[in-house]
Length: 618
Image (cartoon, rainbow, N blue to C red):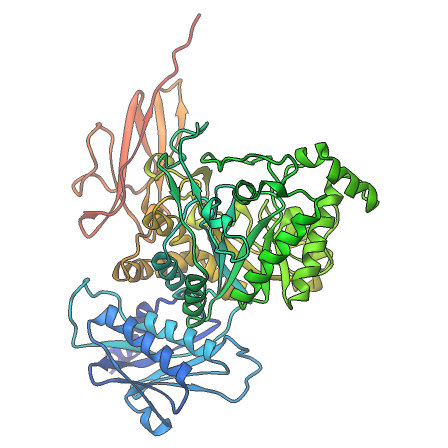
């Protein structure tokens, strides 16, 4: 009898644990209770949406497509009432729940079916992303399944921040409409809700403006013949492209269907060479200008002393405001050299006439004047943290990119802030061993470091913390010239940022995330995404004992329960090589090579380091 009781107690612990091992949701839900049992989804299962709600029908159809991606079979989507919920997936709206807000949801899974409820359709969309992640990911690509089981759970979930974003720089490198849509899908699967579209740059103007056709006739193209100071940082072939206004509307609609707001960015007063190449009369010098094909801060800038400049920008922003329903327009404001303004008689006259102190206050005048116009269109502006210099426009939001300092200062001034610091959220930085990575910026930003970020600084009061409205990851295109490379640099780091943006800070758990990202990798594969596996790279650290003639070497990765195999004889690591368990000692000179393995297969690139005693001279 005693042994029988012991077995029963063991089973009581094992069954919930088995369910726990099946649940891998990113971002981590606010509240998740594992229950015993499962629900089986097969070809007879239906996705039933609340009768007459066409938005829920659209969400159900997208979920059906996602389930097909994971299983190979497509579920019928139909409308109905609560009575149709049995043995099906049921999507419905609640009466108002203050706890869930506009983007939260509740999810109940048991042997009888799946019920998703929310205050708003956006919440049901995010519930659908969770349902997608409850489905096992062990199917081989293109395999056909007859059924899958999902664990019984009860979830109540809602986001921490209202702005959960990713940016893509299409000014330096143009990406097709088809890829922009794919990128939006990638954003949506992580419960992120903002796509920041960086549409203009020194290197290209990408949006059609009807009143100024030269912007796309001239400003959207560069010939690729200029000398570059940075080897390999450009595509030396002619390059260009733009989005028509019809294409913009198409992409905006596509994003809206995925509950994503597109924030357009029109750079000013700097990063304007492409626009000035088309309309040089808006500059301080009159041009002519050539669109650069090398990166770096350009001196060309919109002339702040010229009334025609403001007429032009207001007309551009009027068309932009009509195209994008977003309540916010990004106006840039960063990296605006003042050389031209200092030498410009018109700009100096403006400084004198407006009783401004210097060129920094002239920039503040510029931004404040633009803000007033944007406000007249019923919208707000957001700008990079340089817009703080010389005084911040009254209602402006700040996007902090030069670390966190600008965002902290703006929050203390009671301005709304989006945190996008280059120290944690610049996804064009390398993410793994430098020698193993495709070319990006030289800075290192690992998956673990992204995950470690806390947007609300410890120095904040509760009131100041409330001005931090969200976080964003940025993908700049100086070195990223293919859709595949965009995905490689953005993911999985965007998954780490998504969890920061959505989940309570108390839920942050790096070891748990390491485990859950393994299933996310499988979802990426089934979705055809070119994600990075840099977290599997082996980092080789050492200390040299020159007197003893040895190197003490330690190996590590950022992956969950890695199996690291290594060699010290110069050969390539294989499945037969020794498994790393603790620091190793090798005689000098010597070489260590290492890679990560799973199930007998190598899953990382090979890392290598050579160690030697530096010769001394008498």
